[in-house]
Image (tube, rainbow, N blue to C red; front, side, top):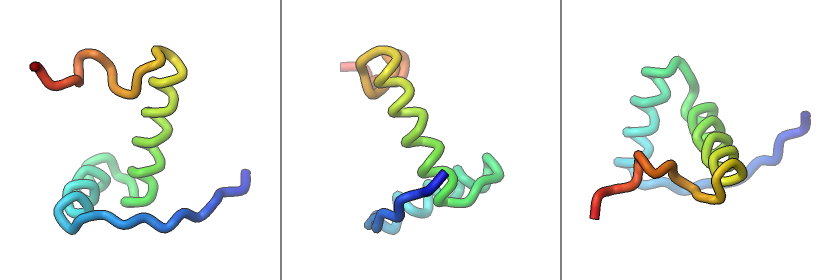
Length: 59
């Protein structure tokens, strides 16, 4: 499978949080971002929503 390269700018804080999460999951930062985006797309295809109901902030 051919992969498309996409430049991405993140705040330092977000990058650090993603890096820590990636380390916890034994992934690279790039792998973690790809995993999260894949899950988000899968969720949208499944339910038509980007975030599962149980993850939405309470109003």
